[in-house]
Amino acid sequence: MTDLAPLRTLLQRRIDLIADHAFRDRDAAAHLEALKTVSEEISAEHQKHRAQLPPRLNHFLTQASFSKALEYLDSSED
Image 1 (cartoon, one colour):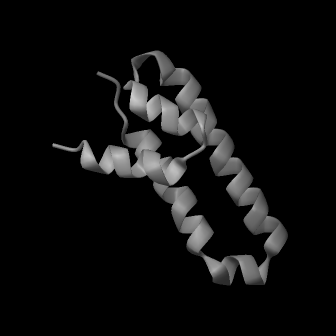
Image 2: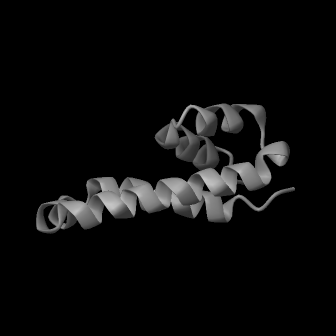
């Protein structure tokens, strides 16, 4: 089975960045660049493991429903 920990970490990092209003207020351009970077990393991780991912998780990632993807991963933990 594919190790989904890196994907989960990236998804959580994106959520944390969105919530970091101090960073956004301090440097809006850098905040936007950080969001762009983590989104690209999520897309790359998705493409790398697409064939091994559960269909529902693939759907969330394809639709950029990153919060739902993170919820899915969190609910799938043993």
